[in-house]
Image (cartoon, rainbow, N blue to C red):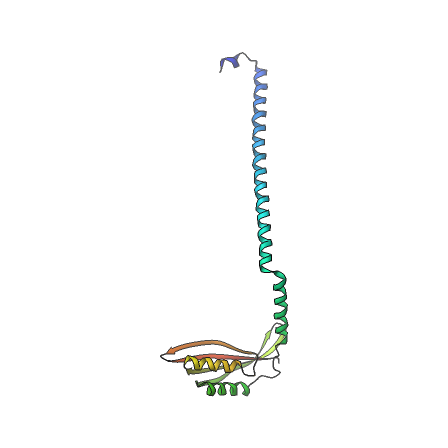
Length: 181
């Protein structure tokens, strides 16, 4: 032991030890408090930065304009009028006329299925027609444009495959039309 500690009584040594423990304990608790305060300041700073960023994003997105656009789109969807009856012969006639007018070669036209399908709250009759055409890219584009300009507002092109063979392309596709009953 150190010489000056030998002269202290046992009771004094205990008191000195308790004072040392209290001092180091107090220093440790102060250090922990400083760490927690610094961490909470960092969290508050991050929160403020995040809040500012969210405000900027909200202004950039303009949520009110997005809601107005959504309402307008929903109104347009309500305006789409589905025909009362499945188009049957009318769709075939449109396909034949569009092929003649555009100059494509039409082959293998077949009605694949007429079936009922539930979409959302409504039941629809779906007519699926499979066909093959051959032509140059401008002729094929003209054919598709003529179909889109026809009387069917609910015409869907599906399973389209294009196979280029030189200047002539072969196209296989399914056409779907929907009617409300």
